[in-house]
Each structure stands twice: as C-alpha cells, then as structure tokens.
Length: 141
Image (cartoon, rainbow, N blue to C red; front, side):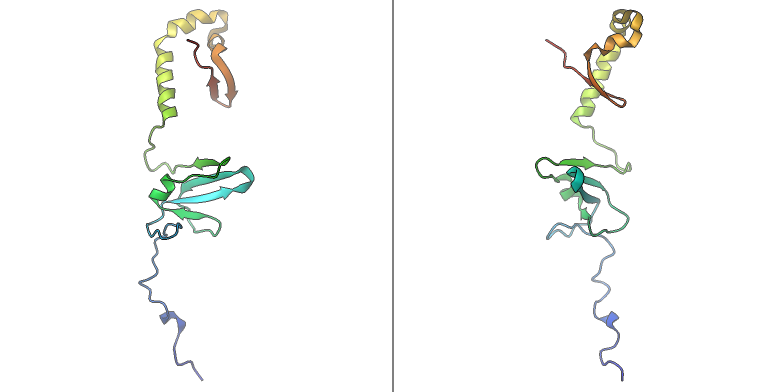
C-alpha cells in the first residue's frame, strides 16, 4: 500500500532554497564573498576568496563582515587576495615606495660610499634579512 502524502520532494518549495551562498554570521543574509578558516596550531585566521565548495569547518563571510574581521588577542589574521580586485595600497606599501624614491634620488652617495664593496656599503643600515626582504634601521637624527 502506498503513502497518502506522495514523494518527499514536495515538502520544501524550490524557490526558498537559494543557490547563492550566504554570510555565516547570525542574522546576516548578504551574499558571501570570502571564506574564513582557522589554523589553530598556528593561532592564525586565514581570510581568502570564497571557496569553491562550502566546508563544515570554514565560515563564509559577506564583504562587510570580512572587512571588519578581527582575531583573538595573540592571533594573526592573514588576508589572501584572489587577484581579480585591485588591491588598495597600505601604509607599508606607501612607505616602501617613498623609501625607494629617496634611494633612487641619491645614487652618487651609494656609488661613492661603497668603495670596493659596491652594494655592500649600503647594507650598513640593514638590521636583518628574511628571504628577499630586508629590515632597515631607522635613520638617526
């Protein structure tokens, strides 16, 4: 004998379920644009472009919530960009650009001060190195 109610597919109308992923924050219905993942071993929160698939251990965030994201004290937030949107320059980017312009404006000091060492004479202000990046000491007044 068959069921009187028919198939279960009629229980939920298809126009209620949206194919667009929504922000995971409570009471926020905006579309998700970024995915947040926690790396507990490194005390790091990684915010990147929207993941291809919704994962149970990740959180999808809208634009507003992804911009306002903060991490617990002692944690680091790593923001990954997908490359499709133009990145806004940060204070560090502008400072690095200004330092590069200042350095390019005084090539005669570098060549004259280096003597036989060439570029090594300019490294007297270098405090440390990590890969291709250098940490420079602040100029003394």
